[in-house]
Length: 336
Length: 67
Image (cartoon, rainbow over all chains, first blue to last red; front, side):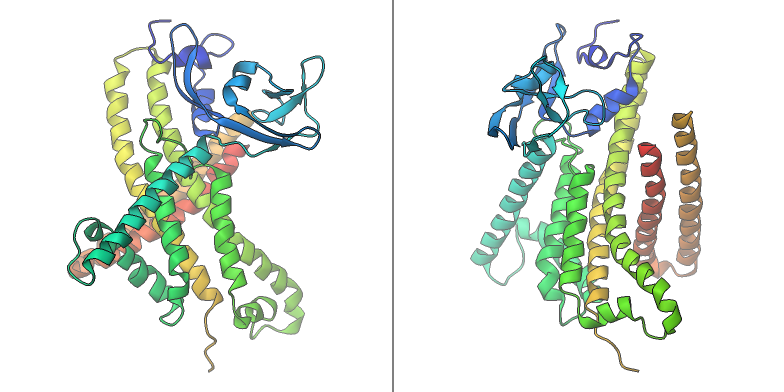
């Protein structure tokens, strides 16, 4: 093996010593307890070890740095399982030192994705609070500074996403949620493209994160739906009674399939983008020559431009579809 | 074998996405050629439709990844 400054080859060498591209890629898009930055030539890793917070029914709350269980060590009776259905999760260690995969503890750790979300939340709070403060100072006048950057976006969300879909009378109630979800997804998408610590965590490419976002949309849609919405689900107008046993399950599936599509769309778009970029970089290690590097880097730059577009687009489509579902659920019935 | 089958399935899904988005692009070009002043509205609708169709194709890719 030639000199390899990143040391990824040693980490992902397969059983025959060749570079294992798929584990390299999947390790980078998956969530993890430590933030791996680089591996030195002697095999030791430079990483930021995030805290592990687990709650075990028998022994209570444990909080420790993930350095204690990095690289197959075990600490306080816990270690990270590597094979089987619980691969990657924290499990008990029984007295012989083998992972005991019954009764997994509840894992509330600050993992890479959680840390990425916290960074995005801090940036979002700072942006919006300074925006509000600057409006308080200048009042109603021509926008200056950060207002000029954010005001068109917020007005776009209000005028082109919320008002046409939810209606003039009710859109204001949902604007906070739509703005939050748009900027949260956008900032997380964009930060995932920056490869430097503390950015570059694959937050929106994590299906758990997009599940919660879609769940928020689902709850807001259903909990503020009016009775016409439920009438449409359970007794769609114009349907003969003998078709109802088919129509009602179909409508209920439709209720769940729309947020499910939201979740999968955002997750798959973001993770696909990260996988493409990682695959192009992995080409260098597969071909084992530095000559592939200019081609690889050029294509990675090109894909990054497309990823920028996809970041904005996915945030926009998520917000648009959320407002569409809210509009459909709160629509006033038109009497013919 | 399952890995290869998954890859073949993902490739088939991409054929569907490519066809669909290609048709959208073609119709958008025709519409812009007929009425150049509506360019921005047509472009907006085209991008939204492309994102939604791509979402459907990505369903299949996710299933292929799981399998």
